[in-house]
Image (tube, rainbow, N blue to C red):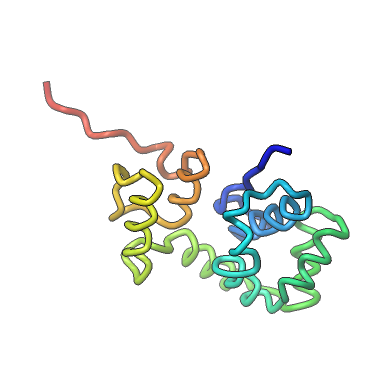
Length: 154
């Protein structure tokens, strides 16, 4: 069976970044196609931050995801089971997550991960963890689609 990668962390479910990726990892793991390198992070790291925000356990979410349903329905279940987020909390979450690794205590980690993945040519001063994930999985992050390399003067 071929391995499959989860969606981009930039993908949005009802205004919330990262949630769709976490659900993809649960589904892909249950189907036996999630690469093994991802297994140790299930319910931890960014997943754990999202679960803490929603006040939902990984086990309960996993059970709900495997029972079926659209991402938006599962997020609504999280709101009913854990807690409903305000628009301001969603804005704060999205801002924090999309900038993680950029000029914060995770900056050294992004430099390490870029080098480890052979992506050290990327500017570690402007890249975020979401950017690293997308590049590492073969996608171009949204902000980089508008980026153009510097041009040499003729």
